[in-house]
Image (cartoon, rainbow, N blue to C red):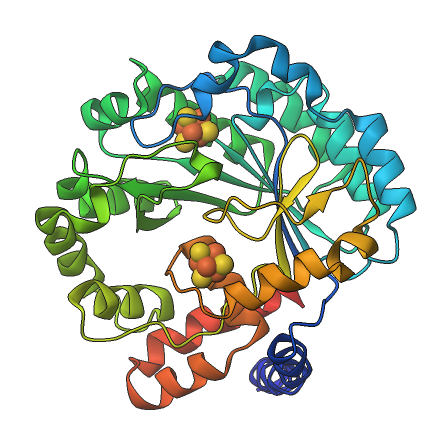
Length: 368
Ligand code: SF4
Ligand code: SF4
């Protein structure tokens, strides 16, 4: 009973707070970020079909020297303490973040300077031994860290999509290690492409046996992925496969709406808060609004966050975003938490209420 009451109170508080965000968004005013998606490095040991980040330093090996160091980030967090004070979730991705030599120090810094944040690491799981060593150290000072691994099919398909033989076995080994080390939240992400769309259910079932929930979403394009591969969202065979699987999740806001959008029966009605409450940081300190838009709001090495977010350039980009529409998982999940009114209407008129309530409770607790 008490649990239910606290959930309802959290939901009510979130709805009230969202009104302030709505007004700020309406007038394109800046908001202190709450969600940071940080590409710690563009080094990558994978050879994925749907993302070319691994090619960046093959083409331009010197560019890696421009990645910001822990000392650079320390200066930035110190200088921008106030503007980073609202951050609650700091996702560290790549490239492959475990290839960043000073990853442990970087996590230590984020944990120390932004003590209220929940830190999440994403990995392709290709180097279980390195991951084990670094995770063990990280857990000694940040026991709440979460881990997300990529699973893009069953063994043969995953290896094909990831372009590295043996990568499926290595990612499962990484999951076993993470379990053994006691990481409480381990999830998996599956990027759906024409090579793996038939295996979504099989992957979900396989990971369920390991106690891991799988998020699956169609491949996106954009600067973040350094790729122009465009066919996936339009490939009718892939779309049909996705729709069939998405039908099994009528209580999941993202999946149910993605299904309707893919079918063309609905358009996105959730306001996007990229550039307001969520930001993407690249390894060089550039701030982008989201993983799909390539324009930079500014560079943290050159200017303070306050100046970047209050600049006329940022305001212009935010005005553009108000006209922009996509349905990308990482952004939808954050915007839906910040401004849950669309979720409320969907819940009242479209959702499978029982399964939805279970999910919503988990998410609210994660960010409160
Ligand atoms: S998807 Fe991840 S692992 Fe694959 S190439 Fe891109 S950054 Fe590397
Ligand atoms: S709608 Fe999509 S592409 Fe546009 S800003 Fe938001 S996340 Fe980025």
